[in-house]
Image 1: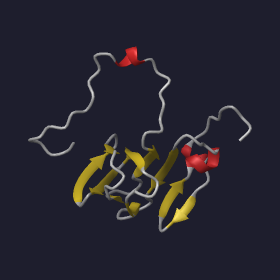
Image 2: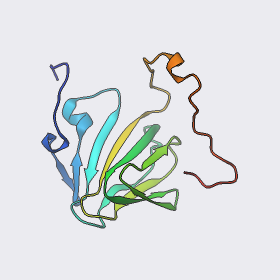
Image 3: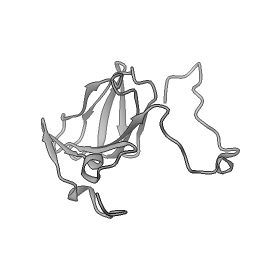
Image 4: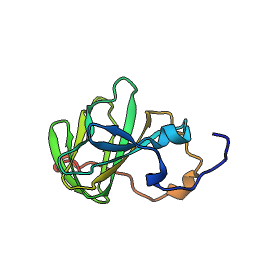
Length: 142
């Protein structure tokens, strides 16, 4: 891509119809090289938005954001019902994951990159005193 930036909408990114999923390959379309990013939308309930997989081959960490609707994620055989604004963070590439739309129009943003490859340009002082996620031994994962 020869331009320095682009401003558009998800609907203007070309779609790949994949087993009923409206897949918008943002990373491919804009030829991004720092991370993978895609949007998956379900025109109907019951569509597998994210196929069952792990990321061992690419050693990727992934983040899924539910943009709209309801989606049931299956993370290492544990179901999680999420709605708009819900997050799934998967640091371990060996963790199996999948997601099924529980409502028509459900949409998920997926972002991933090889673990250990990100270098932030933020000043570490911006994060002083800001807590990080700490799982509780006596509670299920968030």
